[in-house]
Length: 289
Image (cartoon, rainbow, N blue to C red; front, side, top):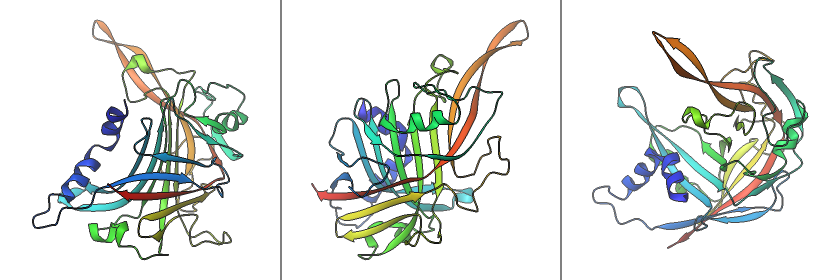
């Protein structure tokens, strides 16, 4: 199970990593295992240790390659912790501070139910992935660089700091899957995006950042309110893409008449969103194999 999910998520990124070992004339690279250590200083995540050797956890650190127009390639460093059911990771003390919903769609589609917007706190706080959910993913990626060398986190100096972004996924139903996996009323998927920025008054260079501790240790710090001023909604109530926030999604399929028959048309709904303070610190530690 772990291998199939991992292959589906990483795709081209794994090909990119393997390609590093095939560079002509390059010495055979050292292979590493990785573990993620959630620190006691984490305000909203319960401390714990997750190893990539665990059956139901993935700890992934790599450089992701993107191909743009005219074959132009760009690169980002990625530090990723993913927990697969039945293993769980605990979140705590998360309080929602702003929100919006589309009354035409189903919101609060979580196992705990509840009323909007308090249903968001009921869902976010606790163990993930909850029953009926598949995975909880905490991905952190850096700025986009035009060369692999610039993106290479192993070339960071000890104590050097880089701004990062945060992506959260708590997967329930497979909204990109077939119609029989859709559930408009429950197990709504949760996504979250926050782009790091230089936030005044937080005592750090950025609200989300990466720093190198020593030869084999990097620390990711997340201290976000999803409030990057360049990434806010243009509409306060309805969902809009590109803004920093957490949102719930579900899919539903409806029959539509086409010619003499009916076909199922799948629609993906973003029914509500919220912003909250989320703060934690994770060490990503590599060990030569």
